[in-house]
Length: 119
Image: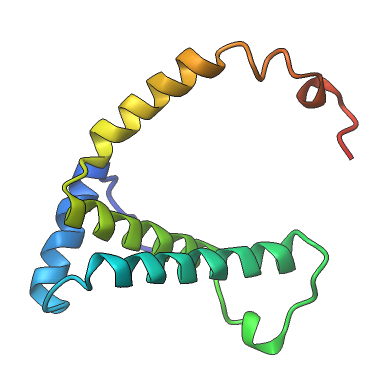
């Protein structure tokens, strides 16, 4: 197995952009990529429902790989960020700060999360 080097979110955005301009001709338009993102999220949901939920696998599901499907979601999300000028590194840092300020006590004080028997 080949070891992959770690990359930052910013590097991932640059790599996707380089790939698109080298191999992909151009980005799909934003609306098309939004539809593709929903499709990819649906594929993750399908595998989650079959792997961890109560649905049974169909023959066509068996060849799918959860990690690959999640990477597809990340890829299209990065495409949308690149197209719309979003720096995901900055956005992620701001999002963590927002969640920390808003929710720093919310989950700790949630009895539903603090009980051993959630099911």
